[in-house]
Length: 383
Image 1 (cartoon, rainbow, N blue to C red):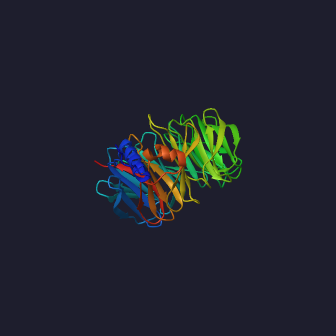
Image 2 (image 1 turned 90 degrees about the horizontal axis):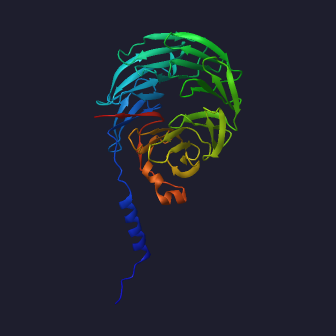
Image 3 (image 1 turned 90 degrees about the vertical axis):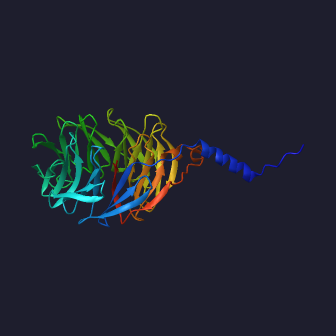
């Protein structure tokens, strides 16, 4: 009895079909990714069910940052136009600009209050911290600062740390009392500051000195200075705050620090000129660190637990900010490509494929044009 010959093409096709059957089907997210286009002076609303731009919302001023409302049941987002010192409220249900307010002549950044009922906006002109309650959307409190600020962070107990490169100081501010507690002489230029997740220590990165300085938040005293092989520019924490990832000029790598042990753990390669980062972690899947490589138009994906390279994903030109969808499986990484003006979508499930692990290369789920120089994004649930 003769048997039909099985060709190589048929064998590969059947293998591909088997893999496809075993792969979990992609599902959308019930809401929008609101993308702040700085050069285009607009916010693009990308429908995360259809992965298409539903509407482009024009703004009077160039946006620099955007944040979703802390209550997922309220489909709103808040856009900071830094040069204009204004904040705009976006109604994601109707995709329109709602309320707006001016906080100062020039703003730097904004952060949510520990009670999640207001934003604190850091302004440079005049130098101040401005409280903007979400309820009435009017400046309720203004705390004057002694020097032009460059960055800040807020601790869980309501203490703000404000870095000033001009005076080489970090000002500690009590937000509940609207009072300055102390000014810490840093000795160098503090490039950025962040609190350890329990608020007990403050971590400051200095690009000129290439180090991390750990400071006792209550006493204002330096605990330790940790030398780095790079000039720290970008940072992010892992899901539980136990690891701090740092990238910057001078080395094609990510430095991993342990905030609670106040020590540098190790340095791992992360593509050429690594920049912005994001962590995608769930309770049941591997935790990934995604690192933008703007000079190579790529994103490097690392396994946080094994510290190994998972894949390199080719995206658009000059990738910057990376946003992870807040669904249970953290299904998608949304990468903003500043030069090409589009958003690359990486599906998390693809990173677990055997062939991706073998060849260290993963495909994009899709690419979506969003506008001129996208610099920030926020995911808002609708419905």
